[in-house]
Image (tube, rainbow over the protein chains, first blue to last red):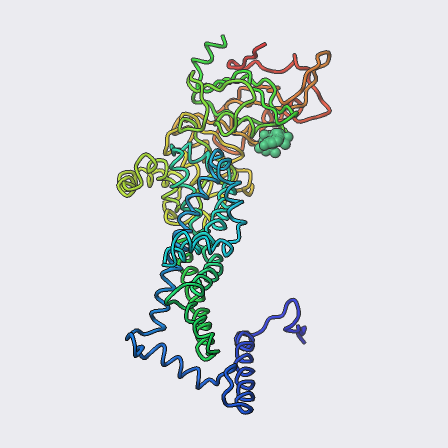
Length: 274
Length: 289
Ligand SMILES: Nc1ncnc2c1ncn2[C@@H]1O[C@H](COP(=O)(O)OP(=O)(O)OP(=O)(O)O)[C@@H](O)[C@H]1O
Ligand SMILES: [Mg+2]
């Protein structure tokens, strides 16, 4: 007779089908719970807006995603998505490049570190949302201020993370590179930089959460399109049938971006997660 | 005599001291190594062997004293002194071939990298063939065994043709079998290329087997009568015969006799030689006073 092991124990080993079932359980439960609660409320009051039925939600999705807006002819979901993603992409992109360059130089060159590290620590503690009004006043209410908010909100953390990574480079490696004829610049950009790139992508993956936060916050306050703008616009009419699919869509986008970045690491940097 | 050694010999150190805070580690090291020598450095753990090596390659600065290569004072690491460490010699993000090509590639701008690769590929492949790794050139270091990694590291260092190859316990992390294999291999290379090697190890047997000259660095000695601060000094300097290319010598009589002698000179805290009684009769041995 073989020893029985509870699948809930420390050595629990569930078969694949059970693992999959486990993974799906919370999602299915949540949807079921929603449908039941929504049915219940709509039965009492058919005008209820708080928990629209799945049918109402899909009508709204169809209207926003697949039919052009009667006034402007735009596909609203598409337009919102493109606007938001380009703001996020530019903001995070600039933050990554800045964070990488600053991080490398602060991490490797003591003089740069003495010059900039205390300042970077200071900047990273300023709450970005608190300076949002300053950004709107300085950069206007157009794209620039929104991109700047994402940039300012994410680059200090990226920089500090790259500094920490760079500083774990063994002194032996740098000596080794110098004995192979590398100059200081080459040590920074041809020896150390390629090694921190995958780490940069990992850091960006984590910073995207903050990036979305700042994006939606700035769109909520001053914008004419964007995913965050739409959510806060329809909030006035309690249009949960729009808000819920938009939130799911944003979540899905975040998930896909994260997955793509993970794939990029696996493809381009096979040595990274050994 | 000192100046003559400095100009005649490849590596020359004078009055090198190193302390960390209050702790004196290296205590007035005078050392001169001729070109073509396979110089091994042994000593008890923590006596300062690695520190000495780091000072010679320029990874660290001596508290005082000077290092000369070919009679010229040297500082920061540069291609005159190659280095193989126990770990971290290879760049994890480069394949075997790229690691070996790096020393050549860095002489070119990033944009001309491919051209450098094409130009030096044959040389790098020849080097990899020599270290018996021609079948693994497109693997990353983490895909290789420890012994293979060290062979790549040797190839990577040699392609730059340094005047002296420094090694810090390069085989320290390997299994005994692989280790002997690489010891023989290194001796073969040394004979073939006629390179100069400075080899640090805490394994006395390895030091005696490999070297043509054995330096014993130790903090175990007595300075009766003088109030010396007492860091590690070179307490013995042996010239070793080098004729047999087989690990069989390790079982010979004279071999174990020499091991015993060196053990007494440098490794036994209970047996302290007086500072004036060190065996420093090697022809290149000298001491500034
Ligand atoms: N950066 C440092 N700061 C302070 N003390 C140090 C530093 N590096 C080395 N030491 C000390 O200097 C002494 C010599 O160290 P070193 O690494 O050179 O010894 P070693 O002879 O190579 O030893 P092992 O055989 O264990 O490698 C040790 O006591 C060590 O604690
Ligand atoms: Mg050491």
